Image (tube, rainbow, N blue to C red; front, side):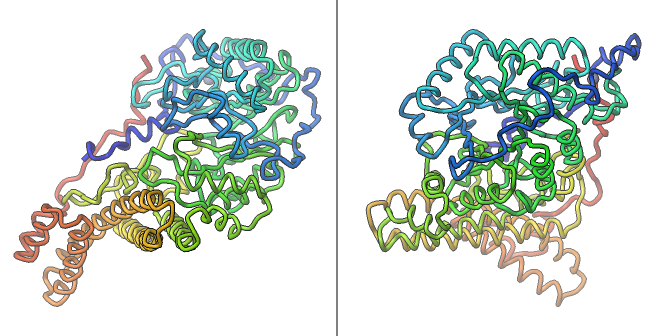
Length: 611
Ligand SMILES: [Zn+2]
């Protein structure tokens, strides 16, 4: 099964923001010789007495007013290249193509957990060859009129095991770690005096924080908000000393929303900015449900930032991770809605595209982005008409319908079940085939504040081994609803192809891509619903009338499966066998093992010391 999926769950977890499954601290921190010394817990390390230096007073940043820039924002930040297409040359041509989308700020590195193309993730990665690369990038950015931003995970973890199952954080209360990053940030500012923005991740991106619940001798008992706000203030002071006026942008990633709000209240607001995902319970939702102002955590964080004069840049995803999943970017409505949604929140001064821009992958959504930036006051309908016009008079309205149904299909997908959405039918190469074992749901969790709070509320399944059949039914029904909508889209694509015009091959490409996703999602739905129906049949086996009703339903599902898999011989044989002898079929297929269950040690409690 795994071979079918180009992005199996482990790979997805590792190659996306590579959440670390923390294991607390290592042997050093646990050594009996580590004794709490008053000076290591000195108040100067915490937020309450962050020293002030010139330029670091309580004057709010002068960045919260948004002069008319891209879409009415001051900044539109983009990445050159993306994790799925990282080898971008930063050539004049590529930068101009990205600029044509309205981007006016470039991130200097892709900064993605899996380090695609060896891109810099931590300050420690800035070796001579990377420095030369960055000098070139900075000069190219300047030549094309972009503001620049560096992104680092700070502090870099001391140790991580392969698969991220064990990690030893670098302790931000350790004077040596604090001195190290004070020095590294100062050196960076000296070396790149024109880079006016540094974005820091303090969790993930190969960084992590000690838990106050032990066993670090410096952090135990000290809430994260106190430690992190003090550390970030210190980092900003170091930056200001070397580059007065530079902005430290911080992303409250992997922490709970309660912690984020508290930290934003506590930090020195001068020359500080926040970069926020649109959801405090997930990465990026491309739609405005449980995100933007409908996510009360995000709404509140933006309010607090605005009250304190701290500018916010909001992230959006214009494609849904192009290249990572089977679904491609043919849902331009979401681009418009995401930009609008950030605009509705007072205090948001910019937007940042989350996954990156690879001009070779630009498609319908990139056209929408360009159109939005060109006409920030245009209505959705006007913008859709504009990007559909090149398809020809007859095909254009049909394309608008196809994109709308594609967007509805994405919205209907069961986003709220599990973070591991690849195995839910979005993996590349998934063609609608499925095993004949009972269906399972892959779910995930990590030992971070976000996962134990807001994300646990966002996903029905995080660390669960068992769930009610209604969860499985809900998934199956959502997947089928999503598939139906995508098939509706295909109907409009077919009509647009029949209408002819200059862009038939482009339409066909979109159509075939959506058709593959629709098939995969329907196949996944069938696996869920067939599993439940087969068990229903076993449950009512004592009653001939009820059995007849259930078997009829199972027959219809299997028939649909055969059609969805284009009469593939394996599934066709399954249907034939079922019709020949339903009872034997129920014994052999989708049949749960009821006399045993899989038990694991609670490994989170018995974690080896980091090596
Ligand atoms: Zn610590």
